[in-house]
Amino acid sequence: MDIQKFALGRQNFILIGIAFVMIILGFALMAGPGSTPEHFNPDIFSVRRIVIAPAISFLGFVFMIFAIMRKPK
Picture (tube, rainbow, N blue to C red):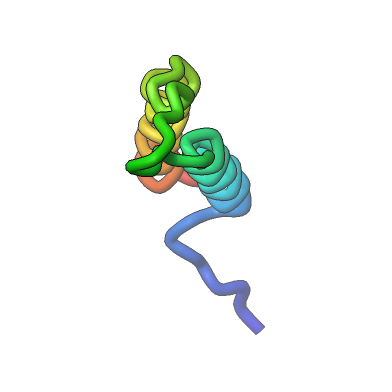
């Protein structure tokens, strides 16, 4: 029986998994309590929620594209 050739190799799937975890981590870092009309929460403007988390998510999406485009060995 012939071994099937897949478009993506094992290493590609590992890299896709890492990228997926990075994206989920970025969205998790953005989560948190919001503000209500009665109470203002200044944490919604923290550096973690408006700079670091979106950057991690964006890098995860870029890494996902790299993982898909990488040629398997």
